[in-house]
Image (cartoon, rainbow, N blue to C red; front, side):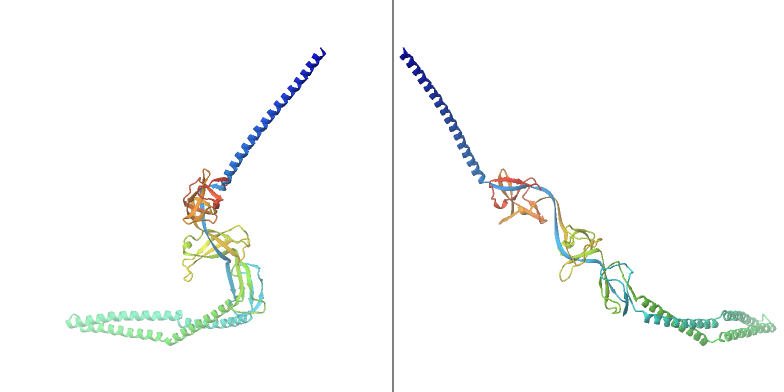
Length: 453
């Protein structure tokens, strides 16, 4: 009995051991299967990644931008030197020694300011002499005028007119008496009047004739009382006196004008740019004593070709760059356009005015002007670097469905940064602007970045 119980215990223990072993093996098999599945998925994932990596390695990275329409301006650039808006070279009208000078280089002057004076002592002495001579000439002129008045006084003329009136009356009476005598002679011959009547008429004629002779002698005697030579002499004296007076008066006015020339003034508002006089030095009308410049407005002169000159007009605004003053452009205005070209160089001069109230722009500075020569509106433009050149002309790359598409293009004007496209592109095309140098037609590409205009 004990043996049977012992065998039963042993069998139960053995079964328990076998059951534990089975469970353990089952768990191990499950774990192994899980590990196998994981490995299979891992290997599949690695293979897929390698395939994708291989495909990506065949694509070229590019940067694109959409093609749009806009405005394009083309400029021609010209260089010139800044000049003053006005420049005045001050020259002394007379030669002499400088008495005093009042301004130095860089000083501000106004129109009419006294710059320097020239010694005027000799001129003043000459004026004093001429003033004395003028007084003598004036007295001589008055005496000559009195002489002429005496010759042609009103009393003389009045009596002359009276005698002339008597002469005219005597001539009339004589003419009437002669007419009566001629008629009486005819009537006497025909017997219409008697001899006595005829003699009476003849006596009247003789009386009229005698009165005419007397009146004529009286008039001629009075008229010749003062001879024509005397009148001519009086008029000659008057003319000589007037000429002498006018000459001295003119010399005096000239001397006074010359005196004003000893004070040299500024002809314009501006700044003293140069000075070549000092007190005590000699000046003449052949040397520049002061140079005055007005730089409230400065000018730049440029020279353009015949292709550009007709695109510039008076009053046109032009950007002027003066780097030594500031980077931003100044706004200039065309003040003059040459109507004809230089026969030697075949270029045309254009003058541009630039406001300079703060006077930061100095004459002599270098200026660069930008002249608008072409303007395109609502046109397709692309960055200049996007255009490539080949044997058949210019071309660009666009991206369509992940492929690089090579497109020939016709170009127009440029503003250095962008170029007009006349044919070959449409608005909305994705244009390659970076990476295009590494592309061929139909290459696979991926867009690394898209830039907007």
